Length: 183
Image (cartoon, rainbow, N blue to C red):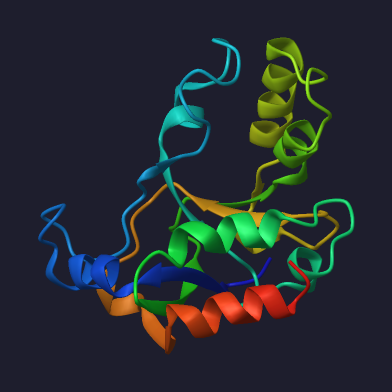
């Protein structure tokens, strides 16, 4: 088992300022906000933590499996679209430590369902995809590879002191990079 793992998180200047000051959450740092599985998706039998907030992160700044994935050609664009709404985009990195509630998950379970032809995805099949997504969790420090769309889901906050800015770019430069990759 690894002792630490460097991971990456895209954000914007406004969100980073909130992380630095703690003004939005009374705590400095990266907070688990985005629901792992949204309300209305997945069966009622999912554990409670399946609907809790997580921090989403990546194992690499621009994972090849995101940029060059014929099965899920729009995932990188979808991921970056929300981030590129602000003028300044930041790429943060931080080390995952043993104390973090950090897991690598197989995002492909959800994406397969979302890529189905119209009318082919049902509530039942989406519930199954959500269950598989949740059940795919591997502690981040134990992950050895093998997922099609490996994504980190972190159920615990990351203290601001642990965050490192890898780069700051204008959104047009980041979005152009997304488009240059064929998306």
